Amino acid sequence: MNHAHHDHDHSKMAGSMAPPMVTGSHEDHLGGGGGGGHMMKMTFYFGYTNVELLFASLVINTPGEMVGACIGCFLLAVLYEGLKIGREFLLRRNQVNVRYNSMPIPGADGTMVMETHKTVGQRMLSMAHLLQTVLHIIQVVVSYFLMLVFMTYNAYLCIAVAAGAGVGYFLFSWKKAVVVDITEHCH
Image (cartoon, rainbow, N blue to C red; front, side):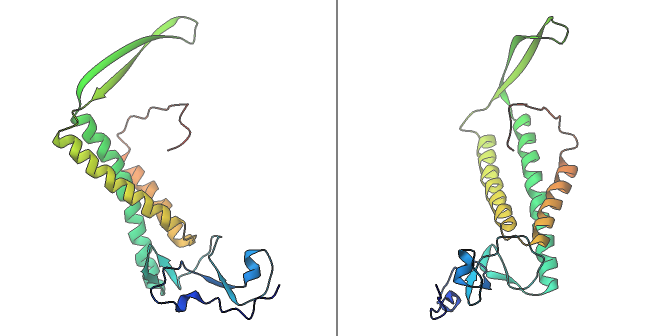
């Protein structure tokens, strides 16, 4: 079906909140070929022109702007890792109501070994909990921003996010005691 007679240029609409688009045809949505319509990029690409970053008014069009955006995304990912570790540190520092629970588990040689778990609580109406709540909100917003940056499929920005997360983990998690939960499948 030929839709060449339709005007699919929605970028001319005032106040359009449309995502970055790529020239293609309406049939491209259905797997066909041709030219004329628009489609959002759904594969990774290396490019620095007409890349919308988080907001419609924040468009990257030059190599310098892309370098700046990559540095910003890198630092945002480092901040995210720092927030995670910082919140854990504050939680440990402000812990109250420490309770220890022991339970027997089978050891490697067939004997029973006592495993101790520490349960930590804190008061709901405290400055420490309020600070944790504010930091949690910031961490969630930053994590969604990083996800949306990755969803641009721009390889430069994705590499910057991944590298920032790695550097942030390297910088902030080196003192953290690692406990592996084999039932945990997601971060």
